[in-house]
Each structure stands twice: as structure tokens, then as C-alpha cells.
Image (cartoon, rainbow, N blue to C red; front, side, top):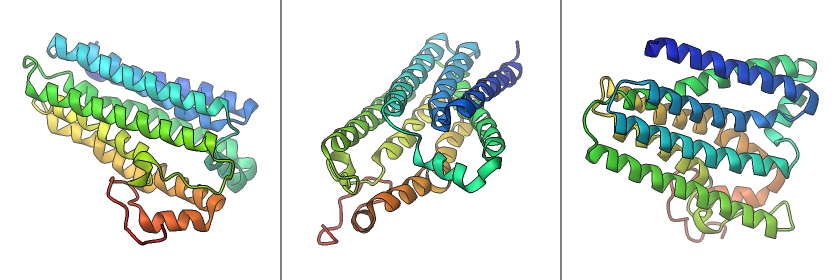
Length: 262
């Protein structure tokens, strides 16, 4: 089977998985589980693509491991959070906005997620075509991956502890990494995609691995990340969150501005 055929098959598999997820959400009214399915499918496709590639065997195994571990960690975190909460406010607002057409709109949205699963697995596929022996680029890639996953895990835990301890929904988390970035979990998720750039730069067309962090940055900043999350935060926390916005960097960790609505 050619790599092109494998990619199309991967996209088709993700499309079927998203169609099943959409069908389930029609009964459960929980569209937010698409985030779990997206993470699981992306990790599985990245691992499968890397193993199907024709590069160095050790590197292919390495990529399958890092992609799989990233996927398991994030999927488990999202699933645990969703089991303890009502439907994410982003999807509730979509249902209100589209009314009777919401399910049809969500079907299209879920299929876009299927394409993104296959798209974000491409950097792993490209990196896995690197036939050179393991070297410094792979070591740097693993370090980037470890730092990013550790940072995202820490940010998730800090926010979870804050929410469990904070009785008021108007409170804003400013502890740990959240003191330096309003979205440290998104920052480290974006940083994670640079590991494939480091590992795959010397592969044929290795520069295309830059599509991963570039596309993720666009989605976080302009589409499914910061904009809807901050809209929801402002609706729940009002002026407290506006003060947080004025003092703290939106994405890249940076020391907070002193004396600005502390």
C-alpha cells in the first residue's frame, strides 16, 4: 500500500469515526466529545502513518510512541473532565445559534474535524520518512515533546485544582502557569507540534512539518481556541476576567504587568 493510499484510508476512517460520534451526540446532546475523538484519532493516525512509512525503523517507532503517548494523555484528560461536567458552553451556544439546523451544522463541523485528524498526522508521516540514523534532531524533538507534554499536564492540573477549590464561578485562575499566560494549556499544545519539525526536518520535504505548528497556531488564535474560550470566560466571570486580560499575556508565557488590575 502506498503512503498516499494509507493517508486517504486514514482520512476515511476518521470520517467514519466522526459520523458515529455525531450520531451519538444527536441522542446524548453532548457534542463536546468530538474533542476526545479528534485527539484519539489524530494520535492513532500519526502512529499508524509513522509505522507505515519507509524511514529509519527506530525513528518510526519513536514517532509512534510520542504520538501515542500524547494522544492517550490528552484524551484521558478530556474524557475525565467531560464526564464531570455538562456540555461545553461553546457547543451550547452553537445549538442556540443554529436552532433546528444545529445537527446538520454539527455534522459538517465533525467532518472538518475528521479532515484535521488526517492533516495533523501528516507531520508524523513526513518525519517518519527520514532515513538517516537517529541523531541530534531526534534528541531535540524528544526534549521539546517532553517539555510540552509536561507543561500542558501541569497547566491542566493547576486549573483543575483551582476549579475544585474555588466555590465562585466568577473566580479567575492566576496560579502557576496561569499567572504568565491566559492559555498555557494551548501554548504547550502548540509547542508539542514542534517536536515533529525537529525530528523530520532532514526528511524528504521535511519543511512541510512546519504545517503542524502553523495550522495549530491559526486554529488556537483565530478559530476553535482562544476566541470561543474567552467569550465564554467573559460571560461567566465578567470584569474579573477583563482585569485578567489586561494583565496577562493571551498565549505566550510572559511576566504579568505589575500594577495593572492585580
